[in-house]
Amino acid sequence: MENQVSGEDIGKPVVHGDDQIGRIVAYEDRTAYVEPHPDVTDVVRSKLGWSETTEESFPLQRELVDEIGDDEIRLTTRM
Image (cartoon, rainbow, N blue to C red; front, side):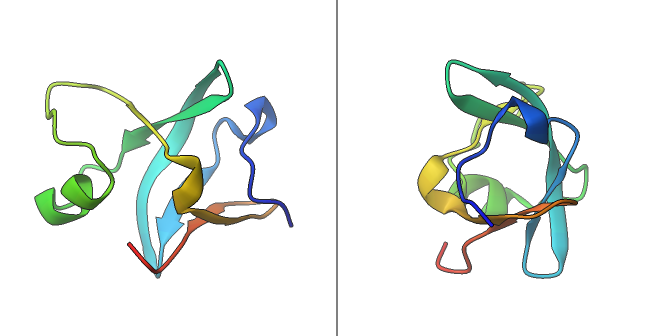
């Protein structure tokens, strides 16, 4: 498995541990954008750098990606 997101990953869920935190909704200029799951807490949003609650999607920091599988993108547990 790789840890670099691409345009082929649009639609995949993004998970941290056992929790789905969102879904990849766009890929532009080598950056994936995640639409957060409605249940994502403010603490998790803060750790991901997603502090603006008015945004619909947020850039996914590459260094947070642990692995990319066929069905999901897993984030590192060291957040």
